[in-house]
Length: 297
Image (cartoon, rainbow, N blue to C red; front, top):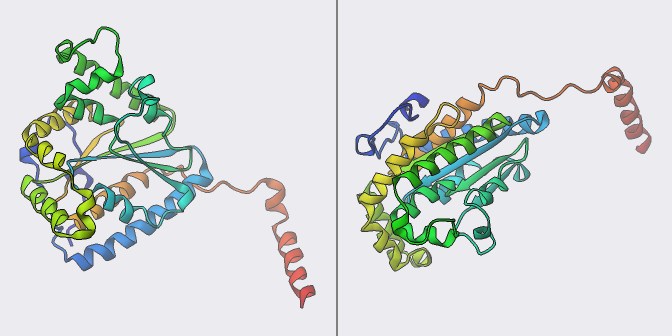
């Protein structure tokens, strides 16, 4: 199996999505990929336990991708071994009336991870510079001063949003949130196959809507805006990773491998030492509990 190298996927300068691969099996069978993911999951779970005890960092994992890119199944498979109380998944849909009474980042800010926990954003604050760019009329629901029609939304508007997002991420990183941003890079042909599977499998029909085909017609527009968003917001503090997503099992392993390789760099994440009194009396406490056990017999 090929070694997973973070440098192969991280975005450090302007990229073209057309030049990025959508398929990488890591030269491994699906069985081997599954076994390797199990190992990575256990390492992530152990790190999260230490991080919870340490209590100074939270981890935010942002996952974006076209429809059928495999976001839901990836989240299920990568994080299933973490303590259920240590990871919270947020799936951001169309903003509610209550959310629209705030600025567009508000609902994401209140979903940030507690210290010691992971938060996974299934679709993220980047929807506000992706879907809304493809459908700028959606911005009108935000009731922004000076924006009356879609014609009022120009390049300066999107440039300000990119700057606001970069400032938001810089702020949370400086205050203890470790940020990962993953784009699941799917080919148009693979999406076609996955949509067909939804139609052919009765238990998957509920996932399909006619709107999926309407959005598919806008594939090239979405790719353009994904590329622009990634190029404007991949920073040293919160870089993007572009992952080939045509193989779901390989994509899951690559994401888990990057997560662990980057997180283990935080060498200060350790379990705290017991207080001096507890440390000095460990043997006494053990004997007390052992004696209780003997007395019970």
